[in-house]
Length: 95
Image (tube, rainbow, N blue to C red; front, side):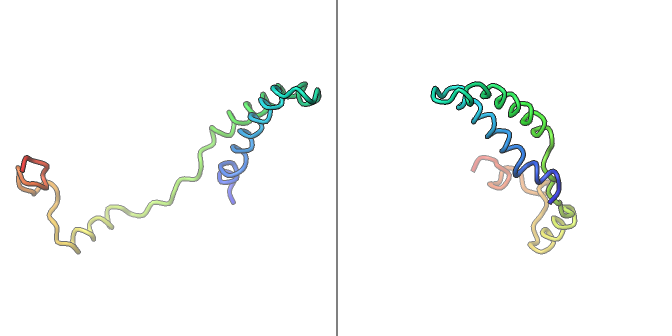
């Protein structure tokens, strides 16, 4: 597992969860400890989210699109888009 995948799956959602828990800790009236450190939790979650949101996930592996599309045209015997008749249904003209 790469760092980017780890960030995408665990660190960014963890930062969001910490922000939400910090807001909940600020709003609850029962525990002074959570009320006292709710702002700190929210700020740490916000800073962590700002850092983790800048790291993009892994790019998907792309196949060679040009070779694949040429093979599909040869198999189906279709004409390329620029050879179609004008005004036909496939061209998007009025039927």
